[in-house]
Length: 353
Ligand SMILES: C[S@@+](CC[C@H](N)C(=O)[O-])C[C@H]1O[C@@H](n2cnc3c(N)ncnc32)[C@H](O)[C@@H]1O
Image (tube, rainbow, N blue to C red; front, side, top):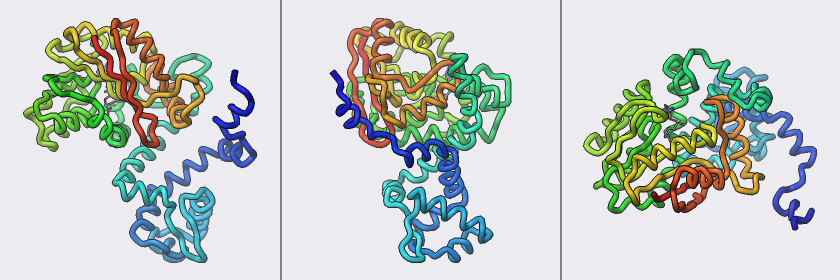
């Protein structure tokens, strides 16, 4: 039985400060976005300890504007102040040192230019149990992905983010996914081939086929050529829900894919993979997961607002157990869970036919 003590241990009780941060969460994000767009963290990463007049001069801001920006960034903890000098938060310094700060900034831009407007329809999306926010994205495509080519700036922001979001976690994918003996991997909905390229580079004997919608072909082929893996990675186009999947693959991967669709659609996708795979073939699910208790992690919950409101009719950061249930329905007999470390709630499920 769960006691009140257990609840306190798992979740800190919300106080008025926490509640205010939720109330003004959108404003907190705008400080983060403005700081990134104006180059404030990059400036302080390069020149630690600048004063307010120096920062104002470097950013080219009016006095009041700089006062607002520094008030917000300091009170939120993005910066800290000693005397008259400003320093970058340690967590941002760490991201910079790890090479992940640019990836983090790509995620900020995604939240600003793709997620922000559409998630104003979150309540209505919950009421109607569908992605009402898509109405705010220009175009006639049936989902966000089929509208990106009609919105070039969004398309650029989306794929830059998708690459970075994948790269934040695919080092663990490369480490944890044992592809010894695998000959061909199908990366279904593989985007700009970011994960296909990483797996090919780590497994020289492996061929990878990226399956994408026609609009994404040019971008994927460009990235494959830039990475110099054209002899290992190729692209085919079609609709993964209805067009035949290649049958010469011993591994099928859905990366950041099964967070977009309903469990019924996910089961259908898994069943299609099952039918395309040989006996002993594997299905790999690589994306964020929420916990089976339904109370976190918080990044999984916050990211689910986007999946509820925008890209396609149904989706969320599902619990591990929902994916496992879909796998069973699709016919897979065993599945292994591999949670990843890090601040994103990524993990891997490897199921065997
Ligand atoms: C969230 S992105 C993930 C991209 C990539 N797997 C990654 O992890 O970086 C989803 C991708 O699925 C593709 N996609 C969406 N619907 C598809 C369909 N019906 N058939 C094939 N690909 C599709 C989109 O074009 C998009 O690139």
